[in-house]
Image 1 (tube, rainbow, N blue to C red):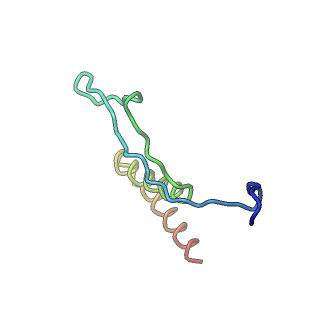
Image 2: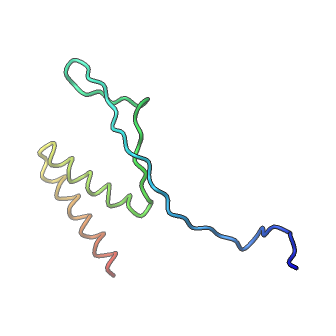
Length: 87
């Protein structure tokens, strides 16, 4: 018969979590969308995806403000990150 003492060391657990459904909540004020933090659910992101997200945000921000340099910097940084991952 085995002992009944609980294991307290050398134990690890890995699991797969289904991320929460993102809710981009906003209210319309004077014809403009205004962020509503009370009803919003932020997206969940694994730490390994943070750098890629920042690069994409830089690219999209550069396009949005029509600033080619911001887009190019984001694109260049993304390319460097891809090369580092392959190495």
